[in-house]
Each structure stands twice: as C-alpha cells, then as structure tokens.
Length: 136
Ligand code: THU
Figure 1 (cartoon, helix red, strand yellow):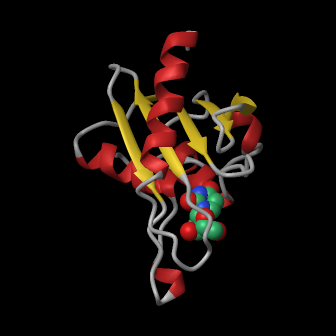
Figure 2 (cartoon, helix red, strand yellow; figure 1 turned 45 degrees about the vertical axis):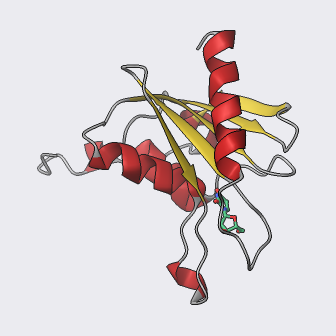
C-alpha cells in the first residue's frame, strides 16, 4: 500500500471514529477497510445496553463491505485512542478473507503505532481451507 492510500485510510478511520457509539466503554474505535478494487468501507463500534449485543468497528466494516458484494481486501486501518489492536474475534473475521491483508493501527492523533499483516496477528489460524467441502 502506498503512502497516499495509507494516509487516506488513516483519515477515513479517524473520521469514522467520531461516529462510534460507545457510551459504556467510552472507547470509540474507527476502522477503514480497503478493497482490492480501491473502495473504502468504514466501521465503528456500536455498543448496546445489553452489552454482548454490541459490535466492533472492524467487523462492522467487513460486514458492510461483504454485504455490498466485496470479498477481497487489501488493508485495514484501525483507529483507537491509545493504539489498541484488533480483538481476536475481529482478527478471525478479517482472516476469512485473506491473511495477507495489511493491518495498520493508529492512535487518536493518527500516529501509526503498528503496521503488520493479519498473518502476523493471527498465527496458525483456522480458516476456510480447513473446511474443504464448504464452497463459499
Ligand atoms: N472494540 C473494537 O471496536 N474493536 C476491537 O478490535 C477491540 C474492541 C470495541 C468494542 C467495545 O465497544 C470497545 O471497543 C471496548 O472494548
């Protein structure tokens, strides 16, 4: 991913984060997911009074994108206040669509605190290849 694209994704994640609905944790998260055909889908965490009913920003972005026909992703940028990294469930959902995806984590100022791949974040992962008879 080139620097310009990365900059656009960082801006999109920071901007999306402003719409996070996080009245319980007070930990707003924004995500910006880049498809291989160059589109950007954003997501935010959406909490709920019934706590487990909430959803993380990264998964919102993936579900938005997949629901619009996208399945191939190049990169995801995640924006949190303090550079917190994607949770395990989000890593698993992202991994469904390819371990070579770039993952960039930025803090609330937009500083890059981690740049890696999903393969690094989720080693020895379980994925679609383990279910060979399961045709997507
Ligand atoms: N959260 C995310 O949106 N993404 C993550 O990967 C980690 C956690 C959200 C869930 C919850 O709304 C808040 O951050 C605190 O856990």
